[in-house]
Length: 355
Picture 1: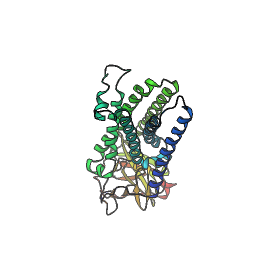
Picture 2: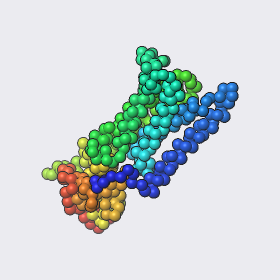
Picture 3: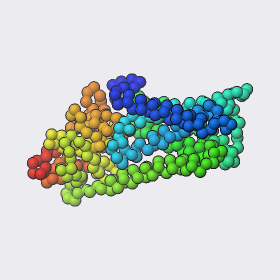
Picture 4: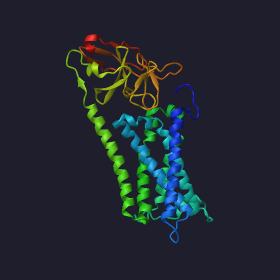
């Protein structure tokens, strides 16, 4: 967090995650290579270099689909949150696989002439006006550059330096890279390998990614429409939940209106309210739990004290807090956020309200 940075703060979860990623990549490449050797036997054998290029390229493309699906899946079902926890590790691994794919291509197709390989790559095909003969390699190169930018800035040092909003916008470029790679595949391998099943697989991948994002977006939109401002003399208070909906030491997300969300936490018979947005990467705090007395973000484990929104020492991050009250059995929140780190009295749950 704010105290210092190390290359990677390894823990058991990260070790298991990374071991699964590396093992999965090696297994995929190995199986692809073995099947390719078996299917393309002499006299129609494919060289080892070509098989390796195809194995790494398809592996990177598949991993990018997985990365893009994790986010909406985690919004639709919390059981996918463990995959989100170290998604940046998966992103760096995807870049490394894509880089190996690109290095093999440049070396195999452009590395044996008198012209610099990169110059050869950029100048050997300039048919930009032809769809069938378009230099699709350039699209892959631009996508690789974007992936490098994201991999190089994946550490929390850059997140802290840029600030969460700017860092998030930078990493939204993954969708640009994805679009470029879909075009790279469509104008490249699908122009020479016209098997219907191959085009169907690429199309299915695009449909799955788009459908999950649309479904998650619609779910969030419907949830934001559930806000219910109170009538009365004090219009700043919003009815957000029933006491019975709140579980001990667990979060609950509620809507204040205009797309603003608040996180409610029930701790020892008291209700606290903070912003739903984690200061780290905007994670949904209300989907997390109270661990060791601190609100804990479900995305990456950042923690804040429920009563004042401050991270426990020695950390210094702060989030806005809200005033809460209980009327009957209903929890009401004052829609005016207090400055980050402001202490606030909790709403005490009576036995009658909890009944």
